[in-house]
Image (cartoon, rainbow, N blue to C red; front, side, top):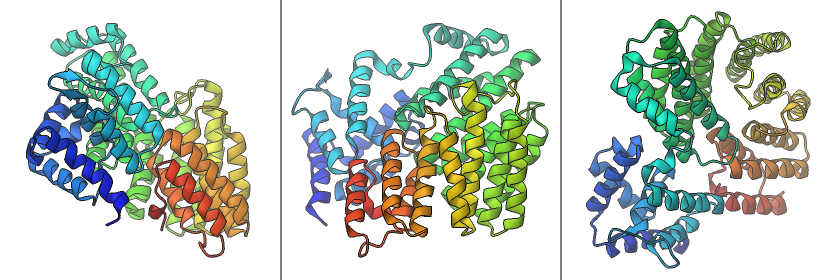
Length: 462
């Protein structure tokens, strides 16, 4: 094992032993802290399972994920019941170890900032999107769920909307999931109440959005069990609604996870088809367009160009019919204008992805150029990073490795800011297509950019 791998492992061992803890004792500290902060995946894990993770970190065979970065930082920010954050502190040494593991500077700075505020203010540091008024309303409503009022539901909706839009603003995904956790817990409890029909339906609308968002974040954080749980809860809440657009949005999102995560084309195709059926009984043409565009990619992945073309045609038809009162206006971006034009660009992006899967490279190039030109200037960095990676692959296939490297470099820069499992995998896949012998200077530059972004080049194959 190389020294660069051994060094962060050695630091982790020294930090634990410096506290006089065994691996089992550290595991118990992490579990208790996870329970207090609402880091559910770790809170639900058994101590022996957490201990095995610690063993792997200290052996240098794996590194902690984002949830554990946060928990370890909290553990090592406190010594003898006092906050210790200065130079040479345990927190400082932990951040050094994370740097050696390839965690980007942006994430380390964000982690330090979050830990500083949380250790000074307690776990309420994670509730930036929950106003004091909403905290008060939720505390009362959780004691009296049958008496939940419309005002509290409106405030819950604003809090969930605020978190969704932060996803495009370089906010760490684990922090978003932590901020979302108390809202998800409240929604789970409040849905058990017997509110008036209008209030209960509004509550279910917020619940579908919150659970779908939590499922998507869990995918980005590599947590398959949480993905299933959150999407199942979204389905349950959506079943209470007469309008099918939110159910369709949730099913189509789950379809993308099945394709890009599990790589299960059959399951992805079934979910996308279900989403189209739900969207047909919904009031949002934006979501109908999205559902058909996703189904088009599924058919392309299944090698069915005829059905893929048909679904792309339906996606364009529904985008062209969008009106200003569409309920999903502003759902994919913060602006109403971006909701329409952004969805049209999304459809073009899906067309590009379909053409790539079918090996129609010139058509893919044209579609991706239209997609990039149509995205809103702000609030669409994740989508832009995917389009840039797809464009890079297209340029490489069309014989222009220089342009491909430039496009992939732009994509890497965006993913360094906003993260995301799908764009990260796209980048690694395209990087793996470069011939290291023929394109050595380009590959070396891309490797440097990947390393700076915390996306190690060795993951690029495939």
